[in-house]
Amino acid sequence: MSIIIGIDHGYYAIKTAHCSFPAGLTSYGEHEPYTRQGLLEFGGCFFVCGSGRQPIQRDKTMNDNYYLLTLAAIAKEIHQRGLPPECSVRIAAGLPLTSFGRDKPKFKDYLLRSNQPVNFKFEGVEYSITIEEVAIFPQGYAALMTETGCLQDEPSMLLMDLGGWTVDLMRIDNAIPVADTAHSLELGMIRCVDDIREQVRRETELSLTDAQIENMLAGQPCTVSDVVVKRFPLHKPQLHDILVFERVGAYSVTEGIYLFLSRPLPRIYFWTEGEGLRMVRDGVHTDLLNSEK
Image (cartoon, rainbow, N blue to C red):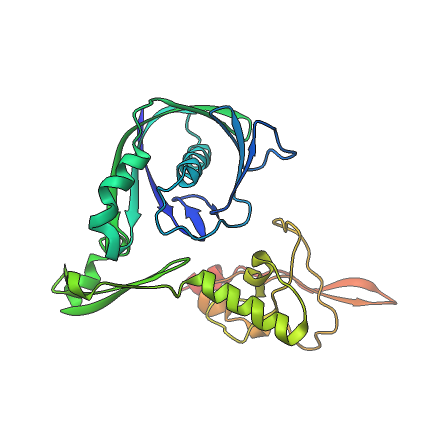
């Protein structure tokens, strides 16, 4: 059984079609760590994948970190698809526009190693993976190939790929990339997160983690004003958890564009000391209202 797995080896996160996790890696050598979450066993050593982020390394082949993160990404994707842990895999990966031609052969050899199958254990499950092929594509432009309508409508367009560490730019003329316009700026999301952390520290003397900075509680999409609180840490929120907001006055579902987006209207409850909790309006499936003739 052979499957295709696309992997984005980002500086900030490792991403596949069905999973994403931070590009951090912690080595524990021959000693088993306390956790099984993200735990990779390979070559007689233990590694925890997805813990924080590792230092920026412009050459991702300089050590085995990104290879180990690749094994974790393969295991996660196979698990998400419900596939057996013994299979053959063809990897599709990407490189920045400015270094694509130079780094392509080395990165391909880095991922496609001679020792096959690759045997490892991830989060307690044993895997035996045969990496049959590795295809390398230019980041950004490869993604644009899924939106060919954009290329047909515009004679010239600017391709911008916002990544963890870099922002890659290139002009496209008549659906053909103009190679000498390719630029890579070190102004990605890692810089944004670090700048936010530093500004919050200066203004409030608080130290925020990446997870806290990324965390936001917001209302319906397309409603930029519908934000209750930003950067509020939630401890492992689950579906159907109840969030209670006190002293919000008249703020309610009227702030969201429910009918326009066909979003379900939630139930509304009033609470008083005398009556307790009382439902004043049941939930409404607005998609049914919008589809009525």
